[in-house]
Structure formats: C-alpha cells, structure tokens
Image (tube, rainbow, N blue to C red):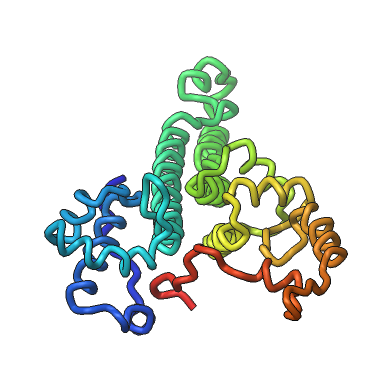
Length: 286
C-alpha cells in the first residue's frame, strides 16, 4: 500500500493513554505506529525487526517490549493495532471512492463531447436536398422571400444535446468502493445495497466496521448478517448471534453457589475472570 500523507493523532487521548511511558518508550511506540501506518499492515512479530523499527538495540528492546505490547494485539506472527486498522480502512475507502468518481466524471465528459459532434438531426433538409426537392413554378419575388424565411426558421430550430445524468452512477460507485475497501466481496456489496433504503455515507461505512470490530467479527460477516436479516446496518449490541440466547440460558441454569472450604464460589466468579487476555486501552480511544 502506498504511503498515506497523514495520520489522525488526538494528542490529549494519546497522552492520557501513555502517561506511564518513559521518554524512550514514547519514541519507540511512535516509531512503531508510524511504520504500521506507512506500510498499511500489521508489524511482524520478530524482535530483531521491531528493534530496528524502534531504533533500539536488542537489549533495550527487550526491556521495553512488554510495556509496548500492551497497545497491540500480539499473535504468533504479527502485532496488530485495531484503531490504526480502522483508520486505514476509512482512508483507503475514501481514496478509492474519489478515484472511481473521478474516472466516472471523465467518462461522462467524453461521452458528452462525443454526442455533441455526432448528434445531428435527420429531419432537417440539407442544401442539396432542398435543391432537388424545390420546383420553381414562377419567378414571384414574394414567393422566394417566403421560402427563404421558412428555410431559415428550420435551420434555427435544432434539438439540443441531452445532458448526461451521472449523479446516480457516482453514488453507486462510492458506496461499492467504500464497502469493498473493508474487504467485503462484490456480490455481498451488491446484495446489501439492494436492501438498503437510504444513501450509504462514509460515516455509515465506518460505523459498520467499528461495530463489527466490537463484535469480534469481520466486516464481511457483519454485512452478510444484515443481508440475511434485512437490516439497514449492523450493531454489536443487537441479537445478531443466534447462539447467544442459548448460551445465556445454559449459563443461567448452571449458575449456583459452590462451596469450597466454606467459601461460596458462584459461576460468575470463574466466567468473569480475565486469564491472560490484555485489557489495555488502545491509544486515542475512549
């Protein structure tokens, strides 16, 4: 992906989330997210590569790695940053939509210019046709004058080229490009646009990506759910997963108090614990 010219950085949010970092950790973290943004994809889970990106020695990287990893979702192969991923989707969608709209506008101008040169009315007689069709029955000056006035009137009334309407095409091109930028298949995009009753704006597209991320599913899965249930959009708080209710029933049924050496242990005491999963706040988010 080509380098993007800017990154959204909310200074107050950043400082609030990173108040515990040292000066060295601040510099290393900013270099990591700048590289992430410039490359347009997650960082490799490789200590040597990450140390080079952060401009640190291997020993110093080992000291700051644990602190900085709190801001990322670390997998076996990558360091993922969900906030930056959402911003990249948004910027990429706007860029693609603008490119498609520009091409559509250029094509419309080309067709309009071509129509002006080729759209000549066929019902207006030419000078040659008038010469062969005219029969001179007398030499009356008044008759000749009347004939010339009729010819001038016929030549003056020419149909104007029709204006090409391309607003609908621009709208459809933007909506399609914005959804495809989220990694959604073209067939799903077309089906979703068929059931949606209102215009799909960039804000609506960003909301779908954000709610899908909250639900822990891909944007394409969120759109598929909308199509199957005839929803106009997606919200993580809705009952989108049919297994949620049955899981909740089983949880309520099995909840009870367990006694261990006189201590009451409810089912929630186990299910609500966080065993190893990072709860760090992503930068800039509330």
